[in-house]
Amino acid sequence: MKWEDVCQAFPEQWVLIEAVQAHTNEKSERILDEIAPLKMFSNSPDAMKAYQEIHREDPRRELYVLHTSRKEPNIIEKNWVGVRR
Image (tube, rainbow, N blue to C red; front, side, top):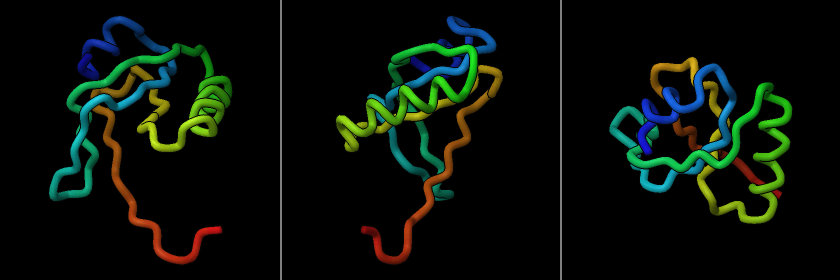
């Protein structure tokens, strides 16, 4: 699905989506070419809890929690600098 399709199918909801196909442009924006909606929520805390559970099981999956009122996802990649434990 495209972001516009998700917004039309699930208006005014929080959605947990997975990027099936995505790339990063020269401005460090993550462009979601193809996404799969996983779950819908009426509030962000429930959506974030579901995100954490799935991310804990498989951290390699590219997951996002977004509200469908957004016209565009507007995801900016940030490079982490420093030591991770």
